[in-house]
Length: 218
Image 1 (tube, one colour):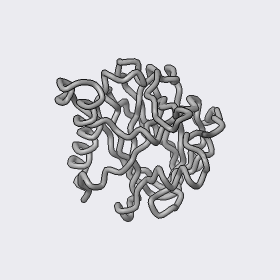
Image 2 (tube, one colour; image 1 turned 45 degrees about the vertical axis):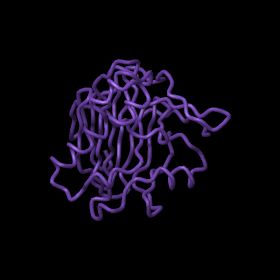
Image 3 (spheres, helix red, strand yellow; image 1 turned 135 degrees about the vertical axis):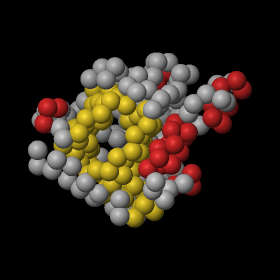
Image 4 (cartoon, one colour; image 1 turned 90 degrees about the vertical axis):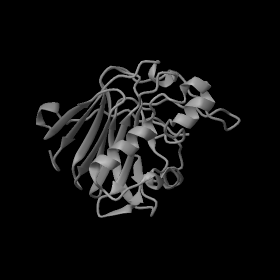
């Protein structure tokens, strides 16, 4: 487990060099330069933002949940967490967090998992892995389905039981909560703003998030 570390950011939205609202169920892929700061803002609360990072100079290097958890000795992500790659290198550092609960164990929803977890008729509902695939196709980058590794679920509440199991619980985020991270290398950020209607983590009501970027030193 980890001690949740709530820290507010000194950065002002009006100073951001980039802002875009991502509707529920939509995706986003954007390059973030070393030293820039990315904020994901939960506009209406209880949303789940499924996210992956890739080294912009070598796409085979990507976010690793295993390396991140091992190096920090805790399973939840919060202020001070260094998001590490599959080579163990720092990719981004979480510098501010007003939610305090971000999962990196539960993975992204897929049509197959929707069917197993909810019911057979959910198989044809849109899922985060579909959004990931659409975004990498639109990007033109040489990424494929095989490059979709284990992701981060920002704002998603996935408690671990005493027996070591996972439980998908009601979200703990609220309108205006955010997580902010500084890029330690040039990265591509791939995001699916979860369309899941059947999961209590987003209160059965997917909502938009906003992406903001500040230049280094702002």
